[in-house]
Amino acid sequence: MKENCSVRRCVGLLLGGAVLLCFPGCGKTTDKDKVYPVSGTVLVQGKPAEGARVTFYRADEGANRPGMAIPSGEVDSSGVYHLQAYLPGDGAPAGDYRVAVTWLEPVPAGVKPETITRQDRLGGRYADPSKSKLTAKVESGGGEIPAFDLK
Image (cartoon, rainbow, N blue to C red):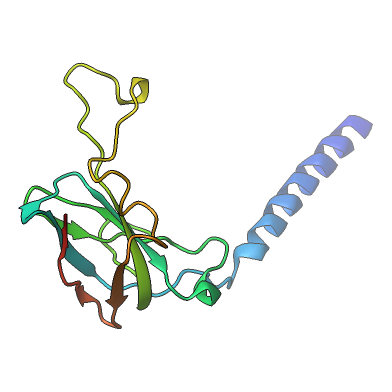
């Protein structure tokens, strides 16, 4: 009889704990910023920078907070990128941004990417958003960012 009561008590405690774990998530609001679809073009000397990575950093330091998205996108074969803050292609929050661009050398055929160090084909000139001098403004509703034609 004692063993049966102990089992019931353990099961009751486990179920009660599981229910309590559910409550903190109920009605919880998200810290995610509203995002808008954003795209743009990156060219190097007038040609698409296929494979380059474009990253948008909030220009207003006061807007930065832990867990905030840092929108980025990869340039396709036509030179176009679509920013992603949380989900593929979802965009970026409205605001002013400093922009960084890196364009790593391609991985040679048959080589594992993690076994080599790839150099930035732009020489690091645009890798630091505080030094790149590239800026962008994302409007409410999103849209297209003017092209970056890098040298």
